[in-house]
Each structure stands twice: as structure tokens, then as C-alpha cells.
Length: 238
Image 1 (tube, rainbow, N blue to C red):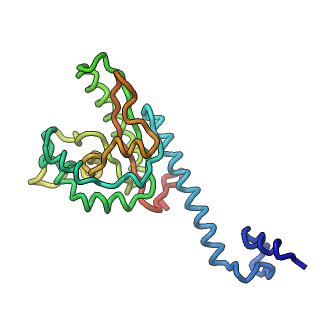
Image 2: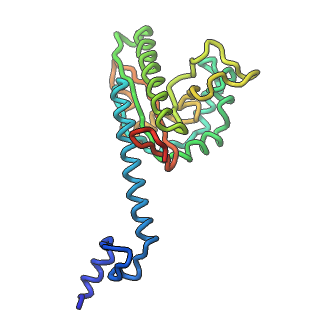
Image 3: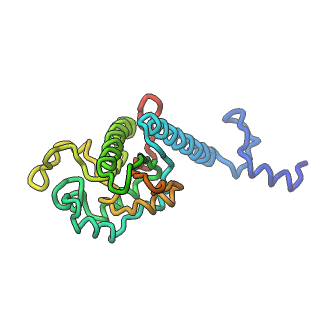
């Protein structure tokens, strides 16, 4: 006979099936439940593998810091989009990668809502002083080159991933917006700010610093993965 405590323990552990005709499996535990259990484990393993692969690529591309993104922080804000509208960079209404060409905040929210995980990457460099404009530009260019390479590699593994960069898209010397379609839609990169994200808040909630101290400059970008999209080592999507 089995004691009540042993029966309780049995319900908490997946039963060991020796064959499809095994009649010892309790009636409350059927093949569909087993399938769901294994599917959850499989999804977890694939997601872990995806993040490991992204982190490996981040290291190979020379980023100073990287960390798993806290997806709860990826909520677009109207005040960030309002700052874009002030057009201090001169790109508002002049690029398919910037507002309003990149879509509404509602579209940005829907785009990010389809993602379940991601990786933040940062490039940090030192400045000679607070007015070291050349140093700032050099760090920005280093980050841009690293992220363009990273985004290209990520898109090969995960064709529907969402890369968000720092600053405006610079693929073309002159954007076709708004008169003609984008020349390189599969390579175009919108910024985190264009999607209404407060980058310092996203970093903080994801366990990363936004500012690494006096005399430094940091640029932040991210790759977001669509829900339930994973790639095996050969790049096959499941």
C-alpha cells in the first residue's frame, strides 16, 4: 500500500513511462500533459541557447558590456517621442528609420510586444575631457560598426529579430524618405529612442549602468527576439 504522503509526492514529479502501454501512470497524468511539460522545457532550453549565442556574438563584436534585457522595461513613452519631434538631430521626418517614418508609438509597442527576450549591448570609451568631441565621435563610430556587424549576424540567425541601435540610421548618404521606399529595409536600423524607449531606464531595469563615471561615454543598443523563435546551431529556425 502507498501512504497519502507518497501519493502527494508522486503527483509532484513526472512519472517514468517505460512504454506506451505502461498502466502504472496515474490517470491524472496523460500524454497531453507530458507533451506540455516537455514543450515548456524545450522552449526554456532553446531560449537559453539563443541568449548564449547572442552573448557570444556580443563578445566577439567587442562590446564593453552586455546583459539580458528586462522586457518589462520595453514600453514606449510619449515624452521620448516628443523629444524626437523637437528634431535636435535633424533627422525627424527625414528618414525611414526615424519618426514618423518608422511608425507610430502604438506600432512600436506592438512590435516589441511580439518579442519575449533580448540582449542589451554597450560600448564604453574614455574622453580626454568634457569637451572631447573627437573622442565622443570615435566611440560612437566604434559602437555603430560593432552593432551593424552584430545586427547582421543576428538577422542571419533570427530573420525576424528586432535590432534597435543608438542614433539614426546611416546606411545611405541621403534617405529616400518620404518619396521612395527604403533602399535597404532588411538592413535598416531604428534607434531605441525612435521606438520611444527611455534608454537609461531600460539599462537600469536590466541590471546595466547607463553612465560608467566621469570621463567616459557609453552607447547602448539591443537585439530583441520574437516570441517562440529560436535557431539551432546550423541556423534553422523553429
